[in-house]
Image (cartoon, rainbow, N blue to C red):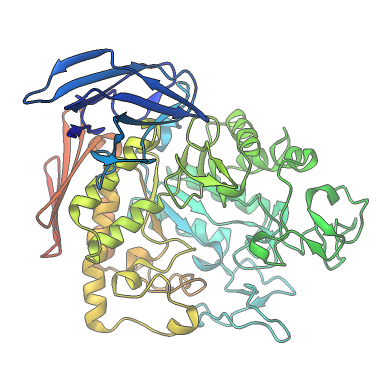
Length: 584
């Protein structure tokens, strides 16, 4: 049997990519025998006969099929006939013939025609700040009971406290809101106009994912007024701020759970009559309760509990509170562990308050992610605006480390963009490092992503390794800034900071780093300012890979930007308008 289908070709699939519900799609296959189109959506299978047939050259006939999906969802399709199927091949969008039972299918994403992403996100450059480690204003005094490092450049630790089995993020460097505010000019000069702050709630740890009080900032950072002032000053500088929503769990020391009996009134652990008791899943109260990834200090919440849902998403809930204090949006921690109903309620609350931007933490293709046995609906129009683009990061690392061919890189990018609704493309959160990953410089210098912190504590790249890492880092930055989405710089990556798994990746920003000049920082600055070009900010994307070269072309109206990467020489050329940027 001979047959061919290319989902990336307008002649075989029209329209291209994801489509709004209510739009007709036409699919075609060229084959030497008649085939049926098998579609599957929401558990229902249909077989469609061809609407038309036309000669396609040689012994092949072109068979075409049309249908109109009437609701958001994922439609899976393949062409079947006489015991064989045309299914995705090595390139996820190009078909190959398989005999027998072949369950692979092409994906067609169908989204809400009303789905849109805030226009103000277009062309933004994001900067991620881990608040305890970016900048410190000494006018904010130390908080009694917290453990502080004696100096800003004191080495990172992950040793448990005496009597404890594990490190709990108990140590603080004292970064604060006023410190961030004092560095807005630095961020502006770098080309940054969007800041993503890791959690700022009151909490016991320096990472603050163990929420202690959703309504108050951690006093180590400052006051609610300090937060408002930061958002106001940032907005005056053309910089927006988004927060970090941690709604799948709280800390065990929180006023809601209150494991150590310090809250007034007592929390769920101490009192079954607590208004927060129904927020948690106690198997045998009080000591046997559901925890996030079995971490006993992070009790899970029941997101669909009416009391919790109202507390977070109600008219005066947490979602709106921080937006009213000046935030322009949210990044949602572990979005794949939040129920659909909660995400939909969250979106309604945030969008009712203002034109907020909502990003979810999802590590895979967010359109076909399955969690807790269900296909998720993140990007169909009722939940998220965008997601953290972990797939791009993985492919950038793999192609620069020689583990992925340019042909496969290009095919992977095309497939992901085909799956994602077009409103999402230019709002994807693209990054090379985060607080959850080793630093990109260390990874491109040869550190394993699976390295244990005990193995790499105190380990730095040799001079030769660092030179190689920075050369690759420059190419990685060029790729991140050229691919569609919002490039996000993890604080200090522009200086080539090194670091292994957390907390080794959370080193304080060098005190002299704001005044330093480096080739890598200069490159980041040039790339960030080029990003304002409409071609890079919102252009369509074409990508090819062949013979050791990768080429990405972005086009918008009469503007074009082209990045060509020579992988063997580890150098690249970015042409954008009249500007040419050589990267090596």
